[in-house]
Amino acid sequence: MTKFTDIGVEKHGHVGLIEIRRPPLNFFDISLINQIADALEEFDRDIEIRASVLAAQGKAFCAGANFSDPARQAQEAAEARAEAKGDPADSLGSINSLYLHAVRIFRAKKPVVAAVQGAAIGGGLGLAVSADFRVTCPEARFSANFTKLGFHPGFGLTTTLPELVGKNNAELIFYTSRRVTGEEATRMGLANLCVPQDQVRAEAMKLAQEIAECSPLGLLSTRATMRAGLADRVLAATNHELAEQSRLRATEDFKEGVKATAERRVANFKGR
Image (tube, rainbow, N blue to C red):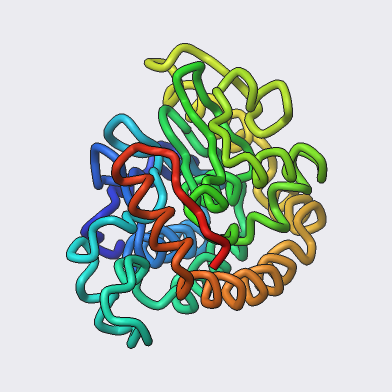
């Protein structure tokens, strides 16, 4: 099995466990998304694995991209060849490359249960939604905070979120950038199960083990039917999202949104 730097990978019988290890907030970049995709592909090749759990160390599941810390991902930023010097989104690296790896996650063949014990923000929400099921807790927060940053939703969320919670609920989440609690997320179908925080991972493993008791060939066949075309829809969505994000990241409003978020204040947007 591949040696990973930012995730832990374990096997528990017929269940694989992927643990994000960038506590406390587990910010993502190209490297992290690539490693998760690699691990899922390894599980696909492992005949013993029938389902997997995606979990995280620390207080957040994944707090999204760390826009306010360009040094965090200097290697990816160098690869990005960004047009604007000092662009706060440079810390993501090449968003196009990141989305290509994200689509690989959606092409995984076996069921995934996300253990969302804390915040799933921005692209972190996109990562949580890439799983088939989500187990969460009242303390968790789900947020597509892109418009509050002066940005456009990404990670395929413009396709995946409406399919999960309905178009109007997705619009509400996008347009307000509000934080949805674990209980609210469960009521609207964004999460499948809400349990005490210290039980989130155990319940996610329990659900994955229940899935893994079923016929592996039956699981592969049924999941392929249920998710038919999903990865292609996500690819199309990320192509459009990337175009909009590339346009908006050059605006004054985006820089103000990032600054205001870092300073924990209401942004003073100018529409330019």
